[in-house]
Image 1 (cartoon, rainbow, N blue to C red):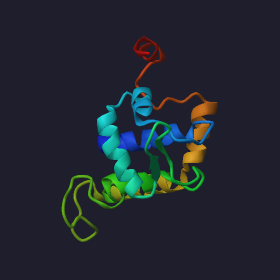
Image 2 (cartoon, rainbow, N blue to C red):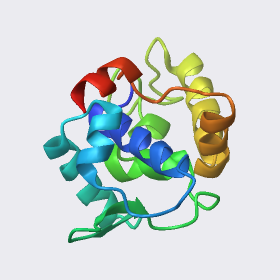
Image 3 (spheres, rainbow, N blue to C red):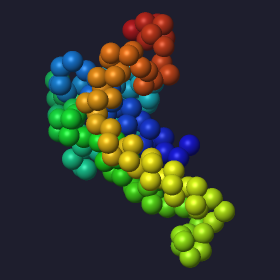
Image 4 (tube, rainbow, N blue to C red):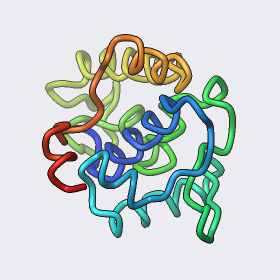
Length: 153
């Protein structure tokens, strides 16, 4: 996959938070259970997103994480860049240094076009739009089934 696991989980967490009716702090262990992600791994990812101003955290019994800004102001590319850096949108798909018009790799022409389309899509999509679609269209953001959640509770 083109995104790291950390980035996938960061995006899925942001989408989960954006899809919640009350925009409140949600404990990391709850998010981890819902998404099927280790809370320890998730904590590291969310600490990074908090440092980048995408999430905010609150300690204590009513603590957890929440989006730092309105979901209408947050776009997917911000999460990708915060976690994985801009490489998905700027670098050679084969990892060739200095790949470009002057010294293209075999995939350069096609990848540069696809890369521009991916950046446009990630820049246009807001967490608000995607959160709304998750709820309205019952879209999934986890591999955890409702039956396994029931067994674990």
